[in-house]
Length: 435
Image (cartoon, rainbow, N blue to C red; front, side, top):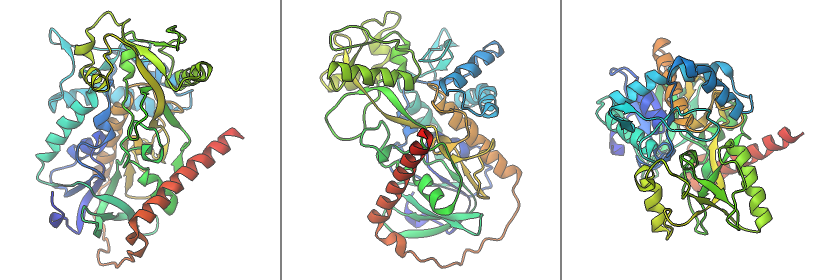
């Protein structure tokens, strides 16, 4: 959409267009006027990058195992009620995705399930090795059909409009660098993680924890912001920029990790944080900036067919994964902490919700179980907008207020201050955690 179409007032503003933002928009009534903004292009959300898959409760017999696997990976620091909600909502969400056109791997018409680290059984649905792209693309296509949704790209939320402890809208910077005050009955933050504050990350660099910075500025409660997940296996590179993820599914299908002598040194299906520690120790022992991941031990599937995106990308980097191991190194990957929310994704500020990686509803605990992220984002984004609708009451918002835009005019400086604020808060939380 063009910025000329930007109005002054909406029913709901959604910041972010990954799976949480899109699924939220799709569950709002058609009579609600919605504004969706994204900091980059439509395809530049981390949801788009997710490779491995999405978890689902296969049968009720798997509930206890699914629940325990999630808690064990999260070091039992999870909110149990949130985990229960996610698991029991999973089949309904999957059925909705299929209705929206999402295609998961099947054999003879039946869904196929794969396994990743720290899962005690196969319960992950997938689409090749680009599951996030498949889901996000299909949801975006559905959102584009909605007449009540305006979507703006290259548009940044620079602040929220507050009336006491009530959110009345946002201040945004459009693609032309112009600032606007835009009002709404409710705001949903679905603006992703914090990878942009790190030098090595699998995230898009424009995801710099904007919601965290604004929470710090407006005394909105945060939770566990030192809970940052490092992915054990990203493609080693000396180039600057986003790190390419080598999906955990690769290890789930049987790939093994090798030291500099070509010897296996670890159980590849350890939870991500534990495996990362083992890889770092081996790198130090070997005096090497990476270890190697061999796919030669994968026997039950064709590598080119099962992992076409990984095969193609590595080949472009000069590595034929069918013939040689991949140099891999840990990189920042996922944020388990974030803006504190309750079971319906409400923040501590009225009329402000948060879902997806930017929020902390307690599902992941101290360490995320593989392939729970897409599911958790979808489940709690839906709960957010359903709560908005259920509690909808007409309210007066002063849309004639004048704002001092001067703090934002030197935008690069303002953005740098926000990034430093987020980084300092994470570092301080780490110090407190070590005491």
